[in-house]
Length: 186
Image (cartoon, rainbow, N blue to C red; front, side, top):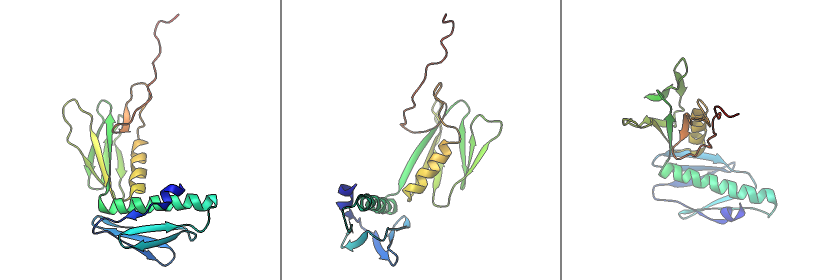
């Protein structure tokens, strides 16, 4: 990860970064603000429109933390300037999703509907369903870690199964399929 850590993080227009006491990095932009505590061994400096991170030694721990915190700060900068989106599709007969504010109501083939509460930082919308197409859920947030965790929890409500491929999956995700029982084989 040290090659990643050596790269400076470029700041787009309207994005500001400040290093607070306690080695806390705060990033403000048009889509909100995020903060991240950085390990005491890693030094963060803001020079013009670049953020640079330096490490004290070449120990494996320092090298890995160097790349980790550079990647986290880069994700925060991208999040407050552009934001992140994740698209998930519901594959199965009768599978659907309704967005009611911060509550998602899923119909996933269970005997009851599943209600999922979204965090305040994540916004969701259900794309209009075309005839013969699968329903698609669109998640938007400025926090990459949070949106990834929410998307994984939504996927875990009904994971794609390997025989028919029914379930909730990310758009473009490949599911390893299995052959069913071979009927009449003797």
